[in-house]
Length: 405
Image (cartoon, helix red, strand yellow):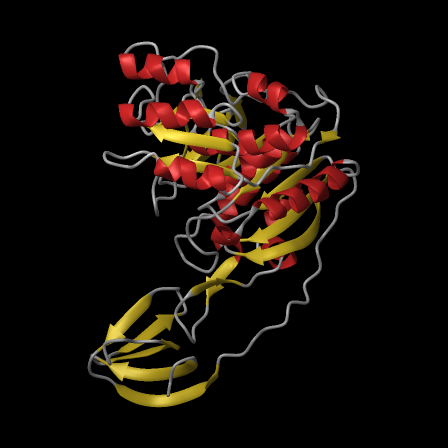
């Protein structure tokens, strides 16, 4: 078996060298030193150069007098990943120190301390991890001028929402990820992290998500943690602000910041942590024919928080009305829209008016995921009636007062 070995071959009159990747076709697949994979049907093996060796990290993090101190907390994800040449899979392997050492330009922006909190892909995130992460960030903000959190992109907007509600922060807390792993030629990790570092020492005091703003390496956007969503599976500019403008544009490579919308300023709020979440809250996507029995099922399991992704202005079928009326007696039901852009309004059609009479609460222009996390936060930290009133209250920028077209 050559998989995982470094080899030199001759094919098509040229000599190639690289790591043998797994192949399901029987052909030889080499990862070349430039990061690209090349397949060969006919080739001559010249030499096996050895096994792929694990290189131990020994580089130290540089510090400069006079620069602000920033904490980087790594939770894993693609920004902290590279290809495992024995399996061909992208896995989370880099430590926080390794990420920093690969980007020496960071030393010109701030003095960085690194902590590896988790080493997971973001689909493995859960509310208990959000709570622990919020506690670590809270403690770090007492000593550092800003905090950067490296995170997998698939559920980053959930985590950003969670920390937005749990943390009142007078300093920047910046989530950053990458769509392409750090060892790929097309990786967006370096640019995203440098733009995040610039944000972490800037005049802002809230939770943000910093990612590529276009497919080119020209600028990043800073999105409010409760108004952002991943909108593409693989593009580098996958993240967009929904029903709001991005907070800022950070140009690359100059790292100049252009503020685009209102924001909490540095020092505007006092540092505070509310670290309880009610996990028995569910997000249900309505589709034609879905039975209201799904509501009864979760209700019977002790769930008292429901967020519904309804159609259009925020509707479900009329045969849900009686079930929702009954469940709303001891539960909070929030209606959002599958359309994402726009605002829920249940006063236009009869079904919507019936939902309001049943006790369903309009989610305004909140994203379904944001509404879910907000309801977990409210039920975890307030009594039922207070939580119910706060659903439609704009706490950290999750609800825009007016819809702009």
